[in-house]
Length: 156
Image (tube, rainbow, N blue to C red; front, side, top):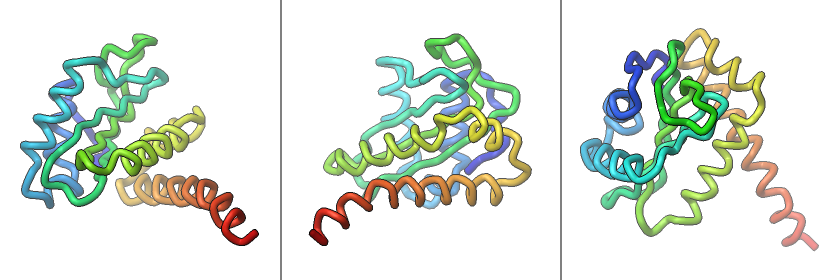
């Protein structure tokens, strides 16, 4: 979680998030993450609209999917379909062999950010800890929702 992104341009903001996010800085491959994410972003913008972008890249050497969320209160010029600046920038780095895990992380993240009041609460959050706790709770709720049908199916 980086709750004070300062960069206002897309590629600068991506680099800033990748190099400042603890989940990536603890790895020995932040340069590989940057290279993969920037290369993917050059192919097509990952701006969804409504102030959200979810950049992603496949990175050799990772054991699991990693996600960072950056918040820009000033907004990032991002080539989003609606032309609005991005305030919630996520980066997903995944190993090439975990496509299903990547897709589940992406869909869960998007569901967590789909409600306008949830997006506003994240942007207005007071601390990285508060914002991270909110996102963790949303992810856990989404995972529970996803796993419940699986449990019912195996119990019957």
